[in-house]
Image 1 (cartoon, helix red, strand yellow):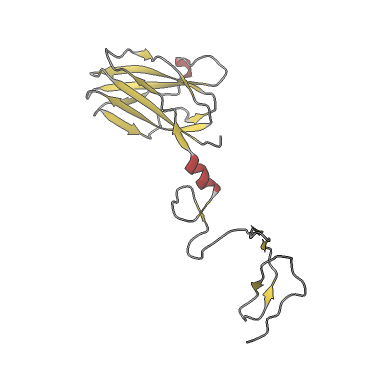
Image 2 (cartoon, one colour):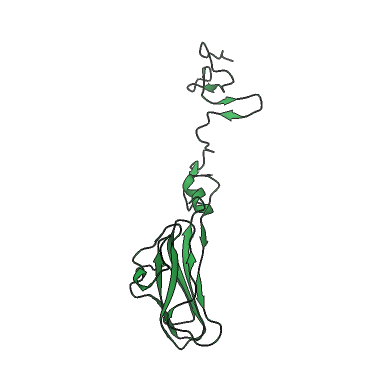
Length: 196
């Protein structure tokens, strides 16, 4: 067995590591272990089989990146609905408003009606600290519609003039058209991150 050699000095509590492939030379390292077994100076861990970090959509056992963690705690919230359970729907702005408390993005919308009819809804949005939204605050071009079937979920956002949501934005919904239906539910889906 060959003698192992090393540097003339070392860092207290540092882990020694091999220098080269001879099996006879060691060197100092920046990783230390204290008396309680706590490691310091570790840059990244890698099991040698896969990348040591994972992106936002990667559900492997790799270590999570900040993007992955942010994505994991993101929530869809405030899928505000307009709805009718009895009687006949009424054209115009529907009763009630809702305020989104955090920054986010509109990522989709959902429609459901009780019969195979049709309906169109426009979305109004106004910034915090101002009056309630009106038709002048519409972020819809023509409105989003359901025209066949009784339920639809869509991520098509071409009708929206903006999809950005700021904390405190207030929303209202305008039913601009309907035919052959007595119950309507419209939901606006906003993705928000808990860190915002």
